[in-house]
Image 1 (tube, rainbow, N blue to C red):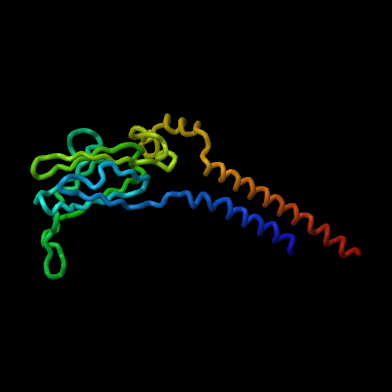
Image 2: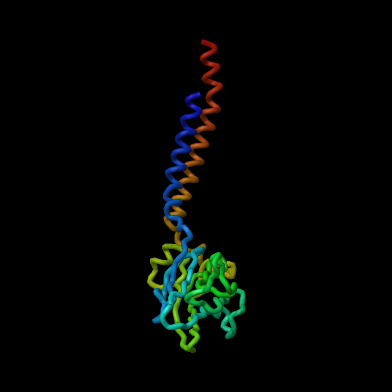
Length: 216
């Protein structure tokens, strides 16, 4: 019985050890805060990863202005496309009643966008349209993974992940060298296959050993 469980235990240990670096290197989706201030944004070019979110808070209590954050993804001059965004007027404060409920449901002080699979890697320009007619420009730098982030500059929009990637992108990615995570994955698969094969051989040999002991 020990001969059967020993290889199985070794296989489980090797699998855990091999996959631990993969899990540790995975990026956990996070939410980043950008403050909308009287003199601009607290961050004018935040760097985020796929599935991260950005939350803007209007903290401009001094200028008595409202702020409207917009992104024209399709470049048609409007903000109603599938990947366009329009925060509406962001106020510094929303009046509330005695139950801490907003008196005006349409009043908002914050705005959030999640950069999910629909957003491809690249730089995204957006604007703060202030109620006094002035405009403040900013950029969001979106990276697919840490390897992309470590590159000198972010690729152009649409060059990596996303549901809108075309076949040429897929073929170029497949031609790239394997990442350390890929190497570890192949090692884990190969080690697991070898352990299973060894376990099978031991199980097949067990009846022979049993017959020999019975004959003695």
